[in-house]
Amino acid sequence: MVVLMVAGLSSQPLQAGIEQQRQLFHDASLALERNQISRFKQMLKQLADYPAAPYLEFDAFKRRASQTKPQQAERFLKSYAELPFAYHARGKWLNVLARRKDWENYLKFFDDRENTRLKCLAFQARLNLNRLEGLNDEISKVWLRGYSQPSDCDPAFAYFLESHDRAQQVIWLRIEKAFKARRPKLARHLGKKLDQQAQAIVATWYQAHQRPERALKKLADSDDNEHNRAIIVHAIDRLARRNSLKALEYWNLIRDHFNFSDEQKNQSQLRIALSTAIQHKSEARTLLTNLDPSIMNDQAYLWLARIQLRNRDWSGLLHTIKRMPSHLQQENEWQYWLSRSMEAEGQLTDSLSLLEQLSGKSSYYGFLAADKLNRDYRIEQEDAASTEIDENEFLANNPHMLRARELYYLDRLIDAKREWFQALRYLDQDQIKQAATLASKWQWHDSAIRTVAKTPHRNDFSLRFPMPYKQQVLEHALARELDPSLIWGVMRRESLFDPLARSSVGALGLMQLMPSTARRVASSLGMKRPRKSDILRIENNIRFGTHYLKTVMNRFDNNVALAAAAYNAGPGNVKRWLPSDTVMSADLWVETVPFKETRNYVQAVLAYSTVFDKSLGKNTLMSSRMDDIKTRY
Image 1 (cartoon, rainbow, N blue to C red):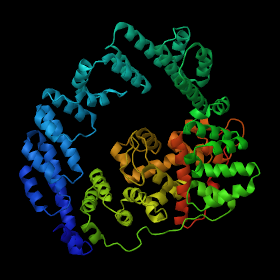
Image 2 (image 1 turned 180 degrees about the vertical axis):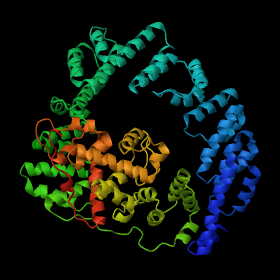
Image 3 (image 1 turned 120 degrees about the vertical axis):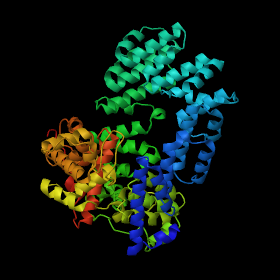
Image 4 (image 1 turned 30 degrees about the horizontal axis):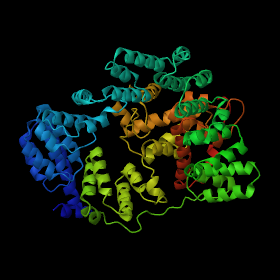
């Protein structure tokens, strides 16, 4: 029935039918929200053949869960076991059973999921039912975490410590993990479970975490024992992150007076060396170069290489790249800089060979290589789906995807994405390409981009780099004298064109504006203070985002690399990262930006803008957006 209904979407009458069902879904949802249950049930019957109807059942289940009987819950969860919401419905039901203290049924329904709170409630259930075999082994996996755990874990933890034959030892293990995870309050809380002498050690450790330099002054003359050595190493780590040279001074003073393990010595030396690099100290190059090769990790190699880049130490860079682990050395980034260092050292044939290989790639380093060789970019459109897609037939064979489409049109985007990516698990590579093409057709660009990324196909630029909201982008680009390709480049990097995107730190919308930034921009434009819902509106988001982008462009003399970095990390950071004594080429500067996120961001925006240029019929060189970086702006 569903297939017949959807199969004719291209015809006007059946299209009208699906639109009516979508409206009926909205009406039913509103009736449920208003607790108009009879009306809701009546409309639900009318939607029996509608693909997204189970989500109304899910909504109703969540509302009535506290009154639901186990047999009813079991039938519901069994009926919809294949739908993504089943996982969340089960979690809701487990919480109901826990509140009822129905431990027998809790264990019956518990699916051993990784949710810590629900897992700890399962421990409580087993304790209440005296099902103790193997329990401590499972509790220990949660106990030995360096982070605070939900209060529902407390009964299990109490049992674990009371029944453990080495309780003091496992308390100490967690204290160490807590300090390592930078959770000193948890460590201090755990210390209260120890005797007074041990509590004094934890107090010393806590002070070393909070005020490492003051603690190191005292610890320099302390007894050489296991706890003091661990505290000193922790204090060195903490101090190095704030003041690497002061940490180096204390380490040189202390290290020969304590019997540190090789691991502790290596840990301290590596942390100091990395911190001097991150803090742009001149001593960093020597400290990293002198590290024993056995303790060099990826981060150490990368920082040493970037320091050598910043200092134009081409000979040292050549040596460092050749010492890198192969997985780093083969990355486009280091193949490009290997070529540059070979060129500087007179190894022209090998340098050109590497650039030739890179120049065929449609990427940041590929475009840099092509510019150096004066070659055209390889941005040639190839359709991911090799044949025309019969949407109706495709969806008829993919119920998850059919529901995803309907949920997308119903503005239930989280549910839509869950269905969509569950559907992809059952598709082969060709079908995934077809799915990406359909998502793009529906203007669901973020899912289209994420979907095609799951395939080796990278040359369908119309899928990977669409240009939505064209009228708004071109209008604001003209009004603010901005390059539209740059606007789309920022938008693509920030949100994959998802107008409802929300980041973990609170950035909103297409151009991922922090509310505070949007409010400042709105004020400067003479607009009222926007709410979050206002910031998410497409027109507002593009207006605010382009205005802010123009602000940072003006702040840094229209240098695109600096403006992109400022859009991501703030103008203050960019100012601190400027070269101190001489002009630096933009590719060198970008490579030595200390924040990996910002470094990748700038490279992506520059490369994406170049791809959008091609779509607009422009042959702009990426290097034309990469003016040399001055010492002051």
